[in-house]
Structures are given as C-alpha cells and as structure tokens.
Image (tube, rainbow, N blue to C red):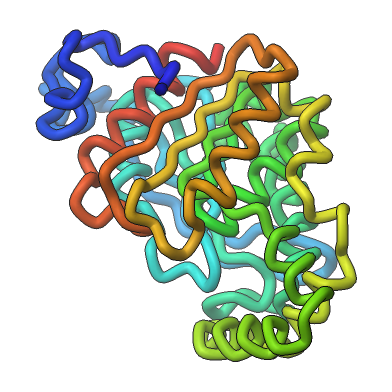
Length: 304
C-alpha cells in the first residue's frame, strides 16, 4: 500500500491516471500547465555547463527555476546507459519552483573519462559538492541548503547509495531503482548468469566509454555488500524518501528491487517513507504524468 499523500482526490487510481489541477502544488498545475506569468528579471532558463569530477568534465544542463531564488535544487540521475532521461519530470519539477541539474556520468554520452558503477557514485557526490560552491550556487540561483536526488533505475541505486550519507542531501527519490547487489550476488554465484549479465550490459553499452559488459559484471561481483542498498537502511531511514516502482517492470522487478527495500525501511520505522507502485513498465511509458506528479508533489510537500 502506498504511503504517498496524494491529496488531490480520494480516488488515488483516478488521480494517477488523469492527474488533477491545483492541489498541493497550488495555482496553475505545474505538471500539466505552463505558468500564467514569469519574473521578467529572473525568468526560467536553460544553462549548458560542465561539472568537474576527479579530473574529468561531465556534460550537464541546469533547468533554472523562475524567480530570484535561491531555489531548492534537484539532481536528476539517469539510468544505464541513460536512454530514458526523464526530462519531462525535470520540467514539471522546475515549474514547481525547483532547479534541476541533469548530467552525464564520466564516460557516458560524451562526458570525459571512463564509465564504471563505482565512478557513478563518485560523480553524484561531485555534483552535490558542486552545488555547495557559492560561485556556482549564486549565478544558478541554487539554495545549497535544499538539495534532493532523483534517480531512475541505476540512477535510483546511485541516489539511494549516496544520498543517505551526504549531509547536503535532504531527500531522495528513486524511480524503478535497482539494487545492483542482486545482480552482483547472482554473477558471483553462477558463471552462466555472469555471462548473461555481461552480454546484456554489453548490448546496452554503446553510449559508454572505457568499459565493457564483462568489466561491469566483474565490478558488480566484486562490489559485494558495498552495492547492497539494504546496508544503507540506517542512514536512509531518517530522510524523506519516495520509492516508485512499475508493476510491469521486467528490468528491475518490484519484487526483487522495490519490495525488500520498502520492507527494510518500514521495519526500521523510517518516519518519512513514501512508496507507490504504478501500473507501468520500466520507463513508465504510459504513466509519465502520474510519475511527474508524484515526484513534484513529494518535493514540494515533503522535502523541506
């Protein structure tokens, strides 16, 4: 059962399917409507930039929100390799008053360096640190005291794996989040499974540099419990969390990736845990409005 407070209607299924105007987001519905007006001196804008991480430059864009700010800011983390970027979610979140930073990890989609799962975690930490730099935060109207992580699939793993331990991160959203340890454990136990995982990762790796399916599978197997999100419960439990899964997701099946994490956080009495399962595939292909609404409502209402 979802604990996410959809307040627009008691008919949660109808809300998820159709959306609702106004509600807790207030005014013109930022999920489905353009704003009636903008600040002429501080309008929303798109900033193309590069973010440094361990000597490499990562390609990034910043969706700067309307108004003088400073604005709470969400860091949006794509999955593996990053075909679904959730930029519609970014636009809805910006219309809700938040900045959104979207970037490509080292070795992904033209960013400098080589790609690895471990370096994804390092890159997330680097971007959060970047938001804390006054020379960055000032021009981009970032409030460094209100930072959220939003991650999809592998990005959900990265958001949860890093977000609990980062003081600067106030809340975390995981969308179809992967617990990479489950693949690592399987690869370690069965060479045939390891070969299958390597083949799949290789097939998805065209936009990535400096790696291979075999290398990535070996990294998963060697990481062991370090990639297990269930080890992060003590640092995650105190923070506001939104976990969203798709009931028809065959890439990160909810029973394997979502349900165990929800159960562990519930057992830990996580006071700000919100979770829901939408009738959707891994990319939430037919639930984009419902997905955007869930994320925007959570940020506005719960990430304070």
